[in-house]
Image: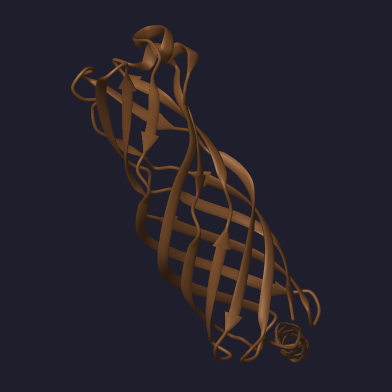
Length: 216
């Protein structure tokens, strides 16, 4: 019994053994992330009934900055950009890749940090995402099928949800794990010599990552 009590005391001391972020502090994190769309696509209309599109995963670095208004409440700005291949599905599956695109999705969340004085510091947040699509290009397979084609994806504004945890290594340095679900809805327009086709895509990616951070 005495040994168990000592073990619990040692564990509690370990969880509370480092300084916490205070009002006015900044955190900077560098994560490696996976951007995994959970996409849902309409048909490519009007020219390809039964043809949809899918979007592949991306693996990229992410940088974020967090400012503490109080010991518990903070705002985080998340910066990253990711490349994605767009592939044909349904009656378009034989084309394989139909386009590629870059996405810049700056995201601002308001967070609540639990256990700010402990070594293990979970948090949850909600905020807004603005996704900017750029460098859209039709694939050679699509061009071969329908001729020269320009591709344009509409930018998107949506809600972002976040949970994560920081694990203190020292007074300043910590490890981080983080998961976000981001609502991203867009319409892709394909212009093939004046013939217009459109497809609505709900990307709604899960963005999961691990990394390291510094408090100053």
